[in-house]
Picture 1 (cartoon, rainbow, N blue to C red):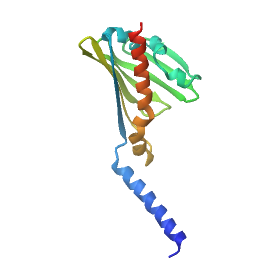
Picture 2: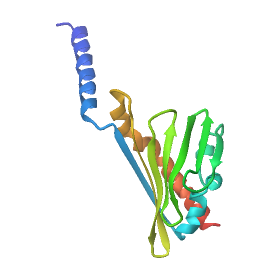
Picture 3: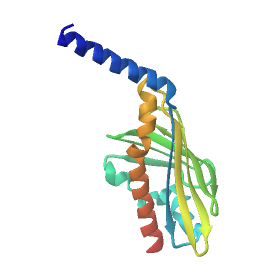
Picture 4: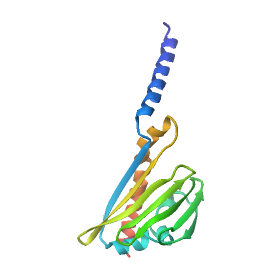
Length: 173
């Protein structure tokens, strides 16, 4: 057998392995990031629970200055915003909002299936543990499960950077 034929069979074997693995891997993901902020939940909620205040701590505009963000309703259940920029378009809508609990919201990015997300507060003595959770599904045949496995690598650092900036803003105001 020639080396070219062996090489071609090896490529087929690798492709078959990738396709087979994609059927056994989950296409869902969950990202969890947290930070301890030296403040009460209601002070943190001033920034998190009002979409008009997100630019004070959120780093999304710094990552994509072309973003055009339109806040449709700034607070309460049903609060929502949408955006569009060179990095894509999307929207979020609060489905739960409480100054001692935090927020839960639906997140849609580039017409993908909605993700469920939340920023939650857990009181710990005189500080608050703030947890940011995003979970969803990647509905792309074959590649979806591999993308789901890498989602924490794609978004985890960005969420953590935003939490660190929230901490800085809350503790210094």
